[in-house]
Length: 188
Image 1 (cartoon, rainbow, N blue to C red):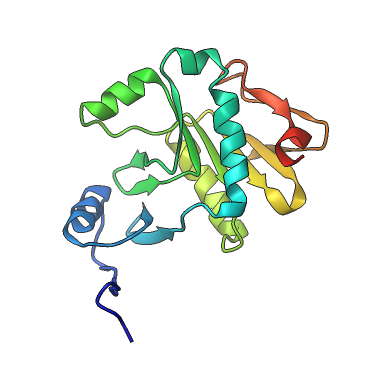
Image 2 (cartoon, rainbow, N blue to C red):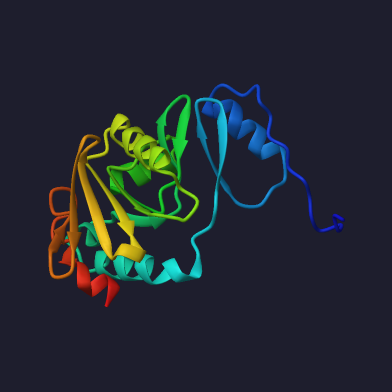
């Protein structure tokens, strides 16, 4: 039984563009966040409490970088536009001060550096598709964090990755100078 505070949200199947999806979203009250990929509306579950420590560690570390001092941001669950038919919502997304200004002026931008935390509901195909989408939108770096394996997979292209674990030094310095740490610090 649905209580007065609950609602059932049905997704339309006729939306073709991000603009159509966002118009539909504004017209329908709902909770949560959604990605839109080529006509598919994909629910994006909120970050779980056992993932908070990862986001907190990374955002605190980011505040020590020169990029942060220059007005750049590492934002949780922010829209990242791929093109007119794809919009992703990475767990953490890096935006420069210029990109933030463009957003403030109504622009739609994509992240240059996406960080995803692998969730139990994601399939291998989901991961591959997301990584491809980020690079299609000119991302320079994607990290996929796998908490239960205590590993971080670093992608410099959609087809090239390297796994980091334990005392390995992981660095985003190619995109965010000074943003680096040992993997064990994140999971310790």
